[in-house]
Image (cartoon, rainbow, N blue to C red):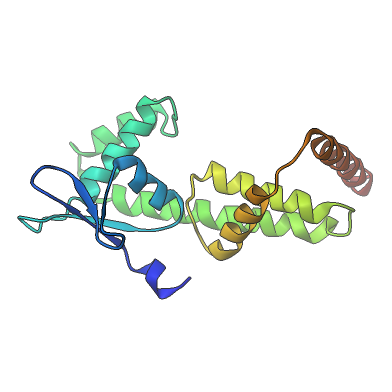
Length: 188
């Protein structure tokens, strides 16, 4: 990653509650900020007058907006447990536990994509299927990047820049079926 990408994008909130992108010198919305984050960019939102860091409150608002739109990522029991954690002694353990859990998820994602490449990389059309799998994993993670994220970003942009027509989709389905048959034979 370039150095600019490691530096959080600074967003200033004016008294009017409008959000100002300091890099592009224009106003942004919560949807824009969500897009920056999904694209792999960290953000920091500060109140212009008080200097208070408002990042947490805006990130929670983005999550709440996505959940209310039907993009349910957090099961009810997890949300319930999070609410309970604010009223128990577990509050001090929850942030560390969640951070470790998400790190394990990122590592598992990376290992899964790497393991796909190893045994069957000689199957015709494998590279295209691998690229689609990586794009799928990236979309499932909501743009969440982890180790090797430059590869994920490149793969997604390559995959999304090519328009597929119906015949290409049918060819991919056939290749996937052939690959599944080849894997099944290897297991016997």
